[in-house]
Length: 110
Image (cartoon, rainbow, N blue to C red; front, side):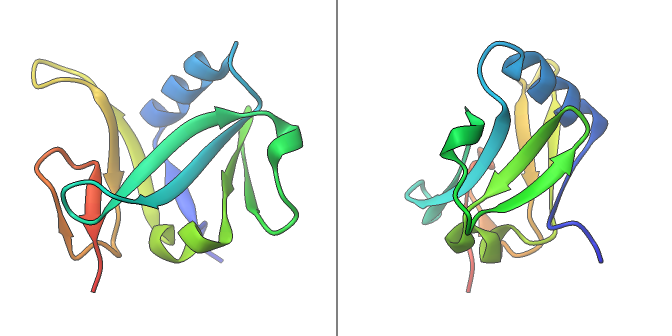
């Protein structure tokens, strides 16, 4: 079975470096808002905040946690991290998105 969400090595390294002092898990969530209707939220979360209904994906040195509502929008997504002259940050490659905004941080589905 394919993973719900995959992380590139670059994204994994960035998460590990940011989470060394911040928390145990990477929470990945979809929320209403942004210029395209839905936006991605990505943050560190202590293990005691994980709910029984959450999907938890073991990933090397940390776990990726996704709530049930967000899971349907994130299935098959790849999370990457890029840096360079054009800016740096996480990049969401979501096969479920029918359109995305110019910054790539919000999306819509039909």
